[in-house]
Length: 288
Image 1 (tube, rainbow, N blue to C red):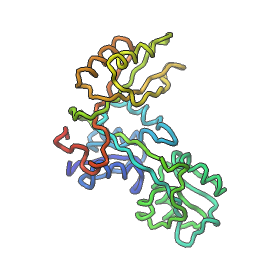
Image 2: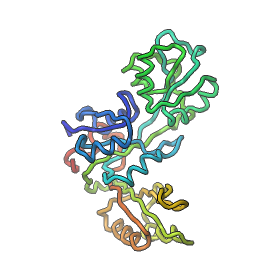
Image 3: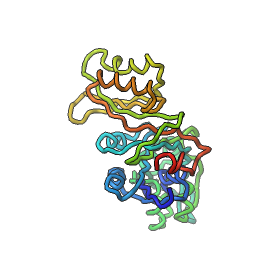
Image 4: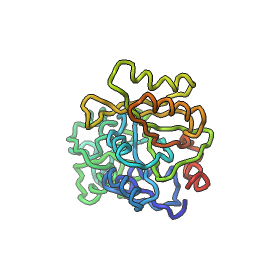
């Protein structure tokens, strides 16, 4: 994958950049973007070969915008990364914990550190990215301000760690999707992500899930998101164990397509294996 470009939302030091490095190693060029929409557009338009996006967190839940953009765009889920997220309170040299009056960070990070922030008693200001907050503080050098960001951001922007591990729970993990125009072949240890919608009638969801239960296909995730054009109707986002090319999965999806009003396969991809971190989870020999 050397020479490939990987788009992500944020600045250098963002958690999504860490996820990209965990997946690809240093063999790719990382391309920071301001918004998730720009990240999707970069891959679709050829400005990047892959994207890495946050999809859900064990404390703060799903990233709704990411799920909505998966529906809007034609990119494939190519892989996943599960990253242990460790938040730190950073400020400039000379700052003290007692002197902090304002804390900047991304809303998801703020949600994940709510108890610590309440005990600190400082004013909380949402920013578009944790690393962007760190970069801005490094520019203004205000000792009354701190940011919640990563240890990597502290190193990059020359900030000091005032408090470590300020997340509410140590079991703080974020799952990221790796996106591409390409599809992945089966590895024998895969997940498949799909979207479907049902008729608005009793038992409709049950009938759509029945083909998976009948074939003993495990669902690892199910979540509903509103259909924007139809109030009080929902799309269902589901992850299942298996690959779309597996005969039993293919049969279940065929049955689902006859019962649902809309079905789309987002992609089949290998389960995250930390032991393969930095190797692209299969590399070019696995479809790119």
